[in-house]
Image (cartoon, rainbow, N blue to C red):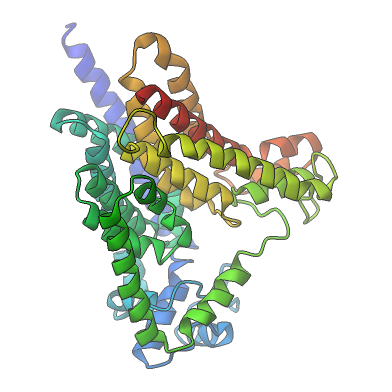
Length: 415
């Protein structure tokens, strides 16, 4: 009887995880806005196939989408979102652009879910010390990800995050296993789709790993050349203006969890919100002060004492957390990239003595819970945009700072 209790409990918890994951996957796939962020890249790839390079002309993309029966988030008649990715990216979307829209978004969804699962496995193998630990961490990370709202949010919108997460995890595992050149090559496509994913290059630099830096440079040069061939001689300049305009931030935006957005939420929210303190002059100093604090915390995992180089898992986690904080528009689905950092911090504290790990693990769980369960319905943002309640709007930003702090503490203990 006693021996059967752990198996019974495991079966119960497995049913909880599987049911929740199945529901969230179904909701993401069947959501009315499913494929919202996939649409502009799919249209850009169709334009590329037609020999039209005007992917940064929003009117052209909108008209092409309308001809193909696509619309934006407000429904029929609303233009699709503008294309903001580098000029080589439409080439990567060609395989799905060859399919009809109704089929391509389902195929993209299924491939994305598979890419996340593989990325979770690679991240666990990168952090683990042996095969048994890799299996344990892999299972644990899969369970944690099953409750992680940013994962489902990215799948619902049709983001490219899943494939970038896979590239990031492959880079991390390659670096942890001593395959530096591969680590740089795997990081290159992630960095040249979403520039904040270039921050782990700091790990290569602080480790003085020339092969990893060479791999990153070589991969980046190849993709830059592909962008030149695909988009023409002005494509990169056009992309620079497009991404610069996209990252302009003038007011608090729901699901943006950067330091700048947090400062705006507290002192100058806009759109009818009531700030915690009506002091727009504090926005820049507050964001700058927290940015300097975050940068100082990120240095700890990059410069561990008494070791030849930083721990790959802790350092990758810290640089990604820093990137999400300082990027002006750090959308909620970017939280997926924090999962390796959560795992690396957990592993570091779990290996320490019982006396010193309870509080850090509890704080780590709190940080994860905020990212996983807070602000799932968008209406929660509007409900909190009032005076004292505005203190809660930057909760995920503060949770990222807490994770970064724990990664810094873990690196000191490891030293």
